[in-house]
Amino acid sequence: MILIGLAVVAAFLGLILGIILPGLQSSLIAEKRTETKQYVQAAYSLMDSAYQQQQAGTLDEKAAQALAMQGIGALRYGDDNSGYFFIINSTPVMVMHPIKPAMDGENLSTYLDHKGDLIFVNMANICKQNGAGFVTYSWQYGTDVNRFEQKTSYVKEFSPWGWIV
Image 1: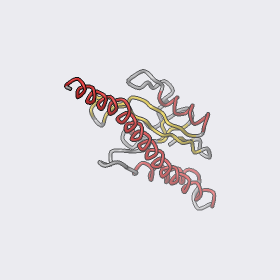
Image 2 (image 1 turned 30 degrees about the vertical axis):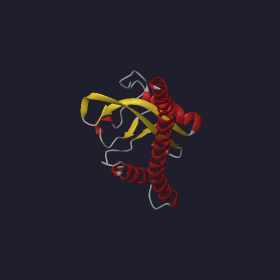
Image 3 (image 1 turned 180 degrees about the vertical axis):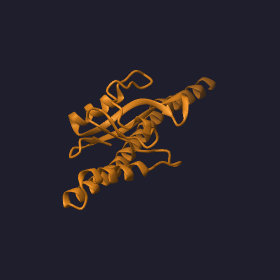
Image 4 (image 1 turned 90 degrees about the vertical axis):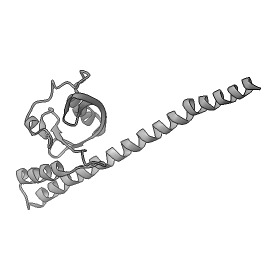
């Protein structure tokens, strides 16, 4: 009787650990990726709005780009508003980083993440190949220089200016 009870408990635990939890984790990851993609689309829309003003002749290219950088740099998301957007170009050079402005203008073609991946080159390559896509990399957590976390970003190319958000 005890063995049957233990077998039932083991089967139940196996079901939870082997099927239910991995399925739940996959669902949460898919939801987070969709959310991230939607956030980037909102930032992309700001860029496109500034570009449309350029096309209409109300702003020159430099002013339209400055407007886009200002708007995108001010955007925050997430429960604690710690999520932000940055803009690179296809070289890749950092066009605008709202948290680390010292990176602005920096050539990132040899920039390695904590695990040794060329993250900005990977971002540029995904956009060159597909126009948009997801990139996973290791990045400093907040202001803690000793803590690195895995991040997944969605990147999208804005071809009129050669920018990637």
